[in-house]
Image (tube, rainbow, N blue to C red):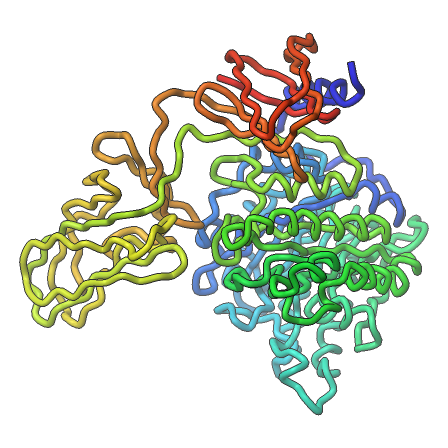
Amino acid sequence: MTTDIQKFFKIGLGLSMLTLANGVQADEVFDDLNQHEIVAKMGAGWNLGNTLEANSNGSPSETVWGNPETTPQLIRLIKQSGFNTIRIPVSYLNKIGGAPNYKIDENWLKRVKEVVDYAIAEDMFVITNIHGDGYKSVTGAWLLCDSQNQNEICAKYKAVWEQIANVFKDYDEHLIFESMNEEFDGTYEWQNQGQTYPNPTYYNNLNKYNQIFVETVRQTSLNNAKRWLLIPGWNTDVDLTSEEKGFVIPNDTYLDRSVNGKRLMISVHYYNPWDLCGDETDENVTRWGEEEWKKNPNKCTTYGEGSNRETTMSGQFSKLKNRFVSKGYPVVMGEYGIVDKSAYDPENTKTAAYWVGSFCTYAREAEVVPVLWDNGHLSTAKGFATIDRRNNRVARTYIVEAINDAFGKEIEIDTTAPNYESENIKSYVVDITIKGMKNGLVFKSQYTGWDWIEQKIGQDGNYTIDLSPKGVKEGFTNLGTFDYTDSVFTVKVNKITVNGYEFTSKIFTPELQSLLWKNGLPNLWSNQFGEYDSDDKKAFLKIDAGSITLNIRNSEEQTYDIPVDMNTVALVPTDGGLEVRNAEGMALQVYTIKGNLIASKTIKSDNEMLTLEPNIYALVIDGRAYKVVVK
């Protein structure tokens, strides 16, 4: 049996035996890892983004931005996907009480601890911070370095970190505190022409926060006196942190004397070039790398050839290594990532895998810990997600594969092919009844891509409104919104019909008063997530944080757990079997889960069909193992 297949069975058995405790107590033994040891053990990381830092009008809420409640099963999936570190951003905002105690809401802090415990139970390293409290765009933000009220801010900041640190002071070396996130005055250098940037006074305030953080955490004693602490510079920008722009590393006066060496880390983020990595709406910028620039410069960044070079990326890591790593300060790239633009360009998946793989390779060479940003949004505006949290599966397998390849890790990635197929929207008809209207209204729907289709209604009555898209659309972001000027009238949604499938279920609010409502049907921000059956049960509308899609159920139950090779090979479930794509000329072996070889052949075409009975198999294609479950 090959080494690869032996690893496959070893990993499979290991995963089946994992367990998770409901309550976690930190180890009494604190392993005092030095700079090189902690970086090696942290490996690659993943962000639980848009979750515990999510808020509505300054009130933190775990699910308010569309992500589901965090579960132990999700964290276990993250661990099994090859990540050794998880960053848990947290906003506190109005969960903090008034002066002078600034007491944090007990239930909120309890939930933060609970999610941290999920990750500790999986033997993961955990980074947790104060995240959204320093964003000027967030209602209730208070950690503002350009505010005139610095004495009160510092007192509040100290009190908050003292409470957080005391909750976790007996946790072992797996827990790392990060003082804050992307703290700056909200302006950029191009907005400050002719002035010193960053503003020295504001940067000094940021440095002061970091100093308060270190002193406060250390003086809560126990393991906090020696654990690693993570320190950001101005907006976690690589240049504005590593160059002589004002960043000051805090004095670690209260570090436990038994510790040999430094125990401060530096936090930076990386999304360059932004028009590729972060701007999901830019349909033209989908590729990256020097070779792509030579072949397709019109598909590469508009920031110039330099931003498209691998040497530009590697140069940033060299800068971090020279300024910090070489002097005993590990660096954590607390956020990096690239949005999914495969809808604009199918080749974008290769670019994304190459960008991520290059990034992690350079990070590993420079002894920098890369922590992937995941905001839970799949293939939508700001779609940084790699994990499908609602279905607890890896969605962008090519990203996870690229990360693990860069770290030399062999893992098993299971992605379950759902028992349904999504269907593009061709027709959409709404049946409504309106009573008591005086001034008329506009009823409109919004499709993926932000296209609105609308119809004006002038008087009471029953209406059958055709809001079918002008072109084929993947899904909706809003099934129906009423715009009006009347104060009171009633609207009853009787039925909607999507591609001929009728829906009269409780997906709709049966009767609406304009005094109270504008949205007559679900939208992405209504928190009405879930699956809603058509009347004949043959189709369902799936509403999640990314889109509202029409899905048609398959007639037969057949599920596969399959990984997809990031480079060429793809395993695709089909009716009655499995299709192996892009593997012509490669050797194929099929093993039972017990390791018995049951088939061996050379793949003859780029679309080879396999028929497999219900069971668990290991497919080895060109020396690489894949797990396939046929049910």
